[in-house]
Image 1 (cartoon, helix red, strand yellow):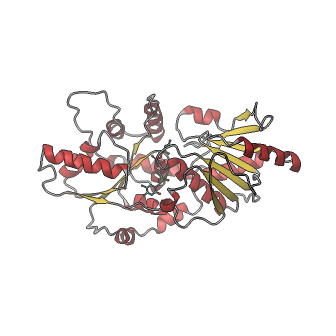
Image 2 (spheres, rainbow, N blue to C red):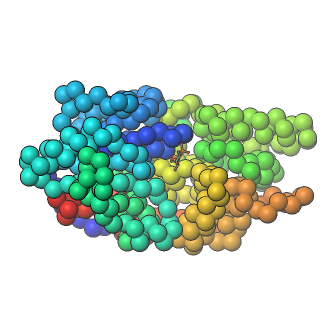
Image 3 (cartoon, rainbow, N blue to C red):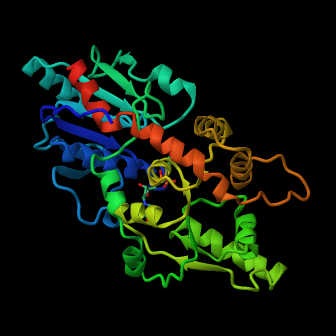
Length: 373
Ligand code: TRH
């Protein structure tokens, strides 16, 4: 693994607008904590901080959370040396004006980063690190830089805290399962974090008809609602669908981000969604299925394909993903896509090993800032 060089402590202002779900805040919080853990001083501005109450109940030293309201309250606020807007959110003009003024007064260079969404598509490598001159407003004359996370060495990489893999290696599965109250008898554990997947009924049927007993660990919110609705539907269609009780379902409470990592480490197969949980499942290294965030224009299908190509996913994993994400051409009677996690393990192990060799996102971001300052 590449060695990390120490960086001077800088003050960061990270801005996050919560669109829906938890991913925007989840990524920003992890980034803020990772940077703070490396000696940086971080202020995280978010327009909806409510999810942090369960995602990060302990907070983190070195990270100050600020509620980001409009208009922004600049009382007593001096912008830091680095400003980062996550996923194209726009920082208020008052803040930019203060930032530009500070740069002039201190004779400092601009470190204004636009952190983009994660994608395995080629544009991430092409656009990573590109400058974007600011042409208007109080930041006129300054330059923003695009920072693209990604899966290859030509991109900004993935978040991976320095201690993550060592913590994973020390993880005690049985103790954690006891802690969450799961009376585990050695069944296959399948974690489920998703929206409303088209292939949910197929998964439940596969698990219920398997020779191997499984326990589905269902996260709260949309996954729980979807599973309850699907099970109710299946019961009306065929009340013997899980006759041998080979499948059990365990509904989880909201976990902290660390607890969520533990869930992924404890499970044999992980169903994840969005962006941050996908990255964490890659580090977990178990077979995973990704419910990609659906976009109205359908571009998520290309994004999913690029990811599966990067993963060198075998045909059955691709087929399962198409069904899970509702991307199969509609037909009157689509057969269930086979659930074959044992065939998916190799590509996951290879992907994790490949990613380990690459520099993580925070290391790259710190080097990038050092270069432009
Ligand atoms: O919530 P998401 O669907 O977020 C999505 C994506 O980020 C997407 O790219 C974005 O455009 C959209 O939101 C608006 O999935 P994601 O990204 O995996 O984020 C979930 C976060 O919630 C992640 O940080 C893990 C955390 N989490 C917990 O901390 N505890 C839990 O119990 C669960 C279920 C999740």
